[in-house]
Length: 288
View 1 (cartoon, rainbow, N blue to C red):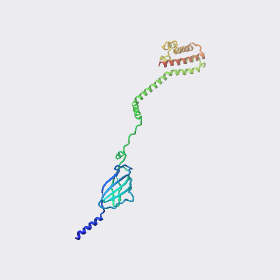
View 2: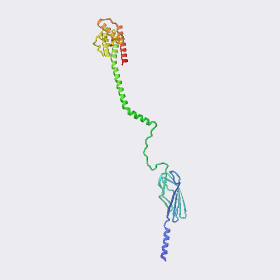
View 3: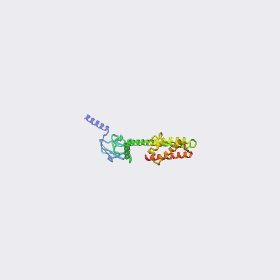
View 4: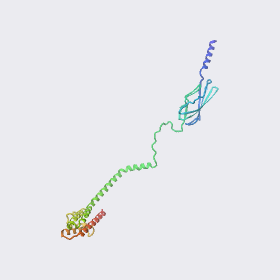
């Protein structure tokens, strides 16, 4: 009889020495769905197989993602209820910091915090393309069209430039005999009365024949004045050709017949040639 009684006493003593067990029954949140920055109450219910010495810690656990404000404990007839008030500051499912509530060790409690920002699990998004300003597409289309036409425009500009250069060069060449004759006339005007009239006319008619050869395309240098007069450019009884032909005749009379010519006559011949050449050049420009 003593041995069974001893075993019963030993079992009771071991039961008293073993700590009470708390079985997690339920975890719920108020509100059920909460977001970053919302105040939340978490209700945790346990079933106890024996009374437990549960108490609120003097210092609340600290974490970088949650702020724990308060812990309330309610124990009654084999049940234990905890109300933990907190505010989360990070989205996602995270583990509440471990707590020692007297005999109760609270661990591995998950906190599912939602976020108002959609696609929180997408990670870092790639950079968007730059937004186009109003009118950018039109400007881009115009630029592309201009780039496509650039070879044709460039070719046209080159042709135009070449033509203009050729025209200016031709104009320079056409006006070269007249410029040379005008230069000689200015020089002869300064020499009237300082040299014999025959010598003065010889130089004038020589330059005039060069000018007429360039303008008519005929060899007026070796032709006589009479032969020049039979050319079609000198058939009219008026106009610059007729005037210049008369100057050649006056020069022949002074050079070969010894006709008298004073300074006034020489100056008048020089002025006559200058005016006739100007008229001939204008007439030639109108024909072109």
